Length: 93
Length: 311
Ligand SMILES: [Zn+2]
Ligand SMILES: [Zn+2]
Image 1 (tube, rainbow over the protein chains, first blue to last red):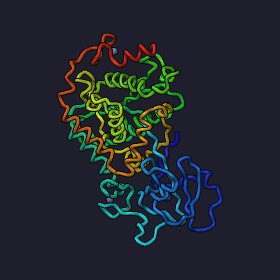
Image 2 (cartoon, rainbow over the protein chains, first blue to last red):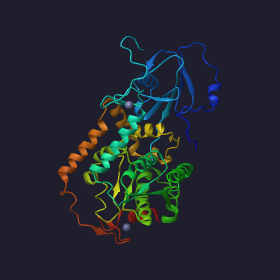
Image 3 (cartoon, helix red, strand yellow):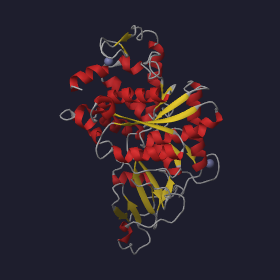
């Protein structure tokens, strides 16, 4: 089991291998880390988290979203080189 | 795409100027980290006080599975209860025997109990019923949740009795409760719809309480994340078989499109309950002829199930 204790506390944690994918060269590409830990990018420019989730076919109620390591609301905007991590909420327990 | 009237990059808290981490779509309010935590804890405290879920002198057994809901329940109660002295907390964990799933969550429960210096008791299906859930379910996986529910109920009662608890607190959240209301309606099960968990024991079992019943699953996830207590745990492998899974999907869609749907379901239940009070619950308490536990028929659900499974 992985406890992500330091996750949002600002402590630098080693970046997972997934970041080894060569970064996009333009500055308007949002990096997305999906619940299954796979990584993709979108070049559609500034958009709200809600719109991003809609584009990805993800129900906002089933996930929480961090932008650059900080939790954000669905009406926040992602743009430029933001890194968006989408975390699925496991049921039960 | 965002054009004119574009939303701000990070909305601010409705109560201060800090960046918001949660947006309550029903009320339209934004919360920063501190105000979100205060709001959740305040609502749990209100639920406990207004319903007398915990009173001075109580010894509360927390049903600590190690999953997110019971972990949040433990954290919130541990924060609230010092202000109500004379209340004691103990953790009770049930090991159903689900290979590949329970090991991680039990480890997590151990860690949480140790961190909060709580006494921690574990009760296993193996010890109590002579086998694991995996073994009992061979060939009847689609019934997993109802079988497990009946066995767990007994195991939790045994655990709470062992530690001498006066209340048994479970981590059921708003989503769970709204799903249950909907499922009981879909099954046409009015008695179960109005039977509240505290009263179904009819004074014979340790009363069950659900302090998180008005906190949504998403709020619980955000609460844990903000405390650095988020754990990426697996889901129960049997959950795929359940009606609840379908109901959860439907309700999630409705809640997204019509914020407040789950709360409205709870309000409907409360209104039906008020109308039915004293009407449905008049059956005299009987005792199971096999195990002597209180029940409504000749034999209790647990003994019927044991007969069927050959336990
Ligand atoms: Zn605030
Ligand atoms: Zn019985």
